[in-house]
Length: 136
Image 1 (tube, rainbow, N blue to C red):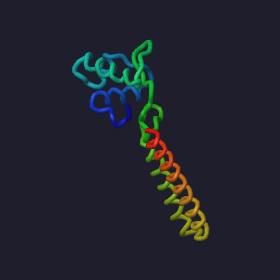
Image 2: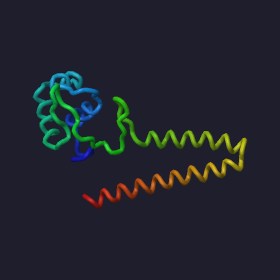
Image 3: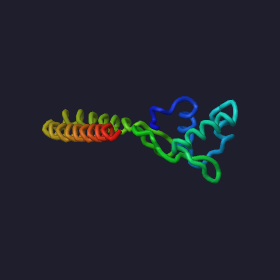
Image 4: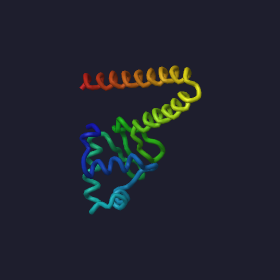
C-alpha cells in the first residue's frame, strides 16, 4: 500500500500517528481527530496494521513504515521535500541578483554552478523514480 492508496479516516489516523512523538491509544486518537467512536479508530488501525503501516506497542500505536515519499519529517512536522528546493532557489536568486550588480563576472560562474546542481538533482530524481516504476 502506498501513500496514494490511503484515503479518508485511515489517512488521517496514519498522518496523526506519523506526527506523534510517542505512541497514541485508540481513545486519544478518537478525541484528537474528533472521530465519532473508538470502534471507527480500531477498524482503521486494524487495516493499517494489516498493511504493515502501523504497529502496536506498549502504550498504544506507532507508525511502522513511512510511506510519504515526497515529504520529510522534521520534529513533529511533515514538510514537502520541494520546500527545500524552493528555499535553495530563492536564496540562489537573491545571491545572483546581488552578484549581477556588484560582481558581474562572478554572477556567470554562480549561475553555472546553480544550473549544474539543479540539473544533477533533477536527473537523479528522474532515474530514481523510473527505477522504482520498473520494479513494480
